Amino acid sequence: RAKEEGRGGWAEFDDHMQTLAVERLRTEGELRRALERGELTLRYQPLVDLATGRTAGVEALLRWQHPRRGLLSPEAFLHVAEDSDLILEIGSWVATEAARHAQAWRAAGCPKRVSINVSAAELLRTDVVATLGRALAETGARATDLMVEVTESAVLTDIEATVVQLEMLRSLGVGVALDDFGTGFSSLSHLRELPADEIKIDRTFVAELGSNPVCDAIVSAVITLAHAIGLVVVGEGIETERQRTHLALLGCHQGQGYLLGRPAPPDKIPC
Ligand code: C2E
Ligand code: MG
Ligand code: MG
Ligand code: MG
Image (tube, rainbow, N blue to C red; front, side, top):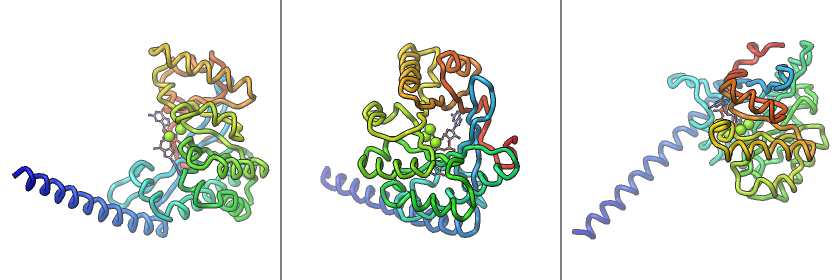
């Protein structure tokens, strides 16, 4: 009996895995068509200078305008793209689209630095330098108007290869930001090895500012560290006035979050 139940469990697990695989394939096919039909779109969220209140740049955030399911966030579909070669095409589309908007803002007399997220899959499987180079050539945007955000998971897998790619980007003039800083395994050793211009303190730390003394201490230490080594430091996920004031008092250069501006279409970003 027990044996049968055990086997039943496996059979069920097997069914479940098969359903997941079918689901994944379907989403992959749908996503490929979405890319072809122009259903992918970028939203932009401002990075605000906490001392002056001025917009210092914007982060490009990917969305899928799904015909039935509405506007989807990356969490709903990006992992599927990352498991296939689709992420390479999507990454290339994001780079070109962001560069196009950067160029349009510059032409309109309000240049902004546009940050693009690059996932581990892209860093490890493509020549991100070539992808960005093509995007710049196609759009006429300046390298210095672009910034690349990488997370530690991207970096952890192959640090040497990542360092080489990031160094090449920086020699072109493209900025490098370490995204979700503090959530990875060995943030401090990465800070030593990686060529970066900016660190973005993960929003989980910002969320507990003023209510968790350990978070206060971590955030304060990261900001001090950034100042000491000459990096721009950004607080992510600012939702309250208290968090904004707290970060500003600690000397955090820039902030990003719903309080300061939600992700919006490019034409809604003030000049
Ligand atoms: P991220 O790069 O850390 O981006 C910040 C995320 O926090 C965004 O989620 C943004 O909408 C959200 N956010 C901003 N302010 C607040 C706030 O005040 N409170 C809260 N709770 N959230 C806030 P989003 O757009 O859903 O993107 C999620 C993640 O997907 C990004 O995290 C990034 O890692 C990835 N991603 C987004 N666009 C792209 C892309 O074009 N390519 C790749 N490879 N990854 C992307
Ligand atoms: Mg980011
Ligand atoms: Mg982040
Ligand atoms: Mg994130």
